[in-house]
Image (cartoon, rainbow, N blue to C red; front, top):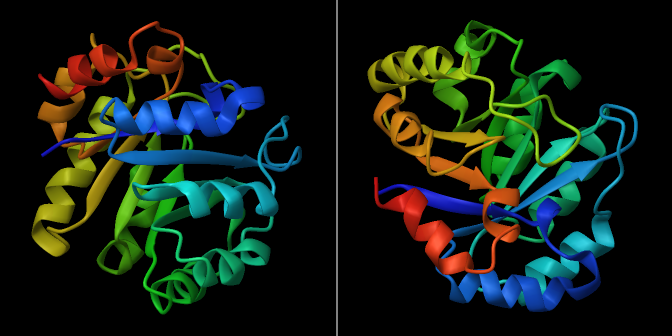
Length: 215
């Protein structure tokens, strides 16, 4: 069953609680939070206090994507708050096994995120230790970008290997997801589709979510 994660990066920050309630009622399965530090990517978004407040009011799982240069600074805290999914970038962390265990020991689903130009083969040594992989289909840092088609092949390669070594691995795709590419993403092996501007930029959140799911 495909899961739809609504990216709050595209929500109205002034009405964030209202937006969260609306997106949950519209049928989103997951709340996706992009955490940017202004260093790993040229933008700033949610800090830890805001993450905690969102988690406290969320009625569905919360997925934190760390686009930061020092993910280890966040992991203990996110684990204590029982965040449901946490991913950090392969490109930003030298001690991947250690950081995965920090999260998993707290009962958090731990994942690795990959930029579009980072080969999926770079995570093969840790694939058995992962709960999910977040494949970026745009370059991280800003919402509303166009989908990069090369990720189809990355998903296909990862799905084939995961089915052999770690069949419970979830593949999440983030960036430019819409009702045109959703079907191919699902058929190629994606389990979680992250949608931001496609949903929040519309007048009918429920209709947009259903258009992604019913493929």
